[in-house]
Length: 399
View 1 (cartoon, helix red, strand yellow):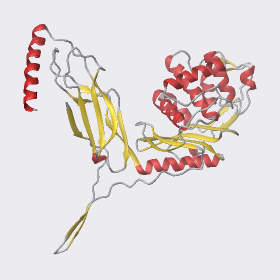
View 2: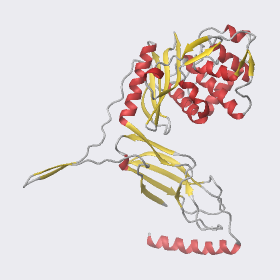
View 3: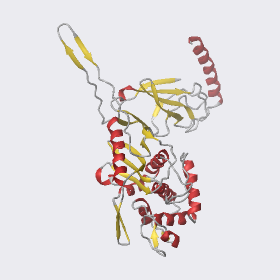
View 4: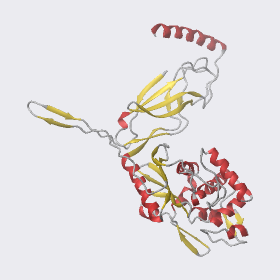
């Protein structure tokens, strides 16, 4: 069983179709609106890069995005993610006070400037990790959450696997160089997508331009936070081995993009190359929300149940990223299982939703039951068996 349907823009967005007509007494010529022409993605002065839509997950541009490279302080995105996860689970709180060890205090590189023996709140340490890239703060949190950097790195790698980061291995919480410490542009974009969607209540920290602790004020090294009001995160990184790296996210008109550039030559270069990627994505693409979580897309027949119909839909919001001004070409096909039988529970798979742009399938999601349907009584089940039998005969005859 399948159903085709057109997808229209949500309220508040306009559709425009323009045709120019040139007429004379003898000839009338119609010039159709051209399709959006998408140029090649910009080439960047970087070792690796990727541009992803945060909502749909579509990759709009990439180069060497699966090459394993030293991530420098981009590593701290996972450190911060795990802190946010524990806050969400309730195992720690922002007001918890952490004892600062000598190891954390002695850790070199960028610092929050905590002192050995200090008691510092989780809130301050999280700000120190994200905004000023404090290696000392990262080690302190690793020790608090896992008892040390080595077990914390193991925890980081387990969650990297869970999130689908296939080419990442962490050896520490800071991003300081290690022989087997690596990640990729794609994996960093995927991690950033989860930071934004999984724990949005903490995401505002990534946009803060300055952080003061112990009388020392330090700026966020992401220059785009000052240059582009749509940019609101995420993290910079630098070591001699890694070069200058930047993970950024920006939101315009409801569309959020994530860019990752790795291995540029300077702070200014990583900002400029990132801006090229973001400008390209916003200029030539748009993201539409096609369906809300729980939206009823069909009510097919279900046999042997207390009711005769089953509400079917998707278990999450469905977004689609496509070239600008081509939304009228979107179509959806519902491929429903042909013989749905009770009992049925919420979340049970019942088919697939396919989204097409013209003739090209550009997205696919699982269709699920949106309600429980219990088995009907004996008489109802027997009656439905008879109806199914004759329904099958009629269907075979008409085919």
